[in-house]
Each structure stands twice: as structure tokens, then as C-alpha cells.
Image 1: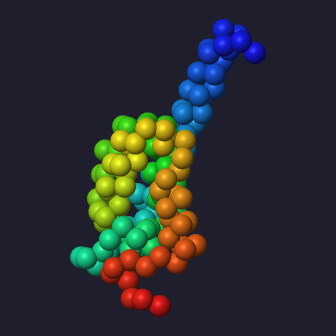
Image 2: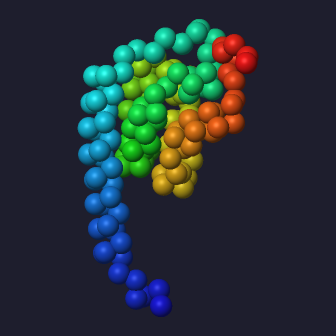
Length: 129
């Protein structure tokens, strides 16, 4: 297949449809999260690992869907959402994820959420097991 044989119109159309679907799903879930998940009370010295332990899975999925749909524009939305939910230690992660190239397709927050649980990582504000 020669490079000139690639139909960029179809590829961009599919990418656009997927991004619009992700935005719609992200916004619907965002509304649900705002209605159902109240402010999470973290200790004052909580780090990002402690914050991920306290974060419901749906919150990180919403952040990843918005990041996929909006790319770098998702950082301010994520920053506001995390502030409203009391998850301030996670705000730098959304900023780094938005600034790093090629992370749009990778659900970084969901992967971090899973890694913290699978690897049994302990934050500074959690009692050690």
C-alpha cells in the first residue's frame, strides 16, 4: 500500500466520530459524578497515591474520556472537577497528562488507579498494612 493510497478523509471521520462519542459519554458521566459523588475528604498531607485510593473508579474514567475527547482542553475541566471533589493531589497528574504528547489514547488516570491497587502502593497519609 502506497502512502498516497491512504484515505485520510475516512480516518479523520472515524477519529472525529470516536472523539464526539467519548465527549458525549464523558459529559453524561460527568453529570452523574457531580450528582452522586460528594466531596471526598482527604487528610491535609495526602499525596496522589492516597488520593487515588479515595477516588471512585468512575471519576478516573470520566477524566480519561474527557482527555481523549478534548485533548489538552481537558486539563482545565479536570482541574475544576478534582478541586470540586476534594481530590487536589490528582490535579498535577491531569496537567502532566495533558502536556505530554501521545498520551491521548492512553487512559493514564485509569491505569494509575489500577496500578495503585494491583501493586498495593501506600500513600503517605494512609496507615501501613
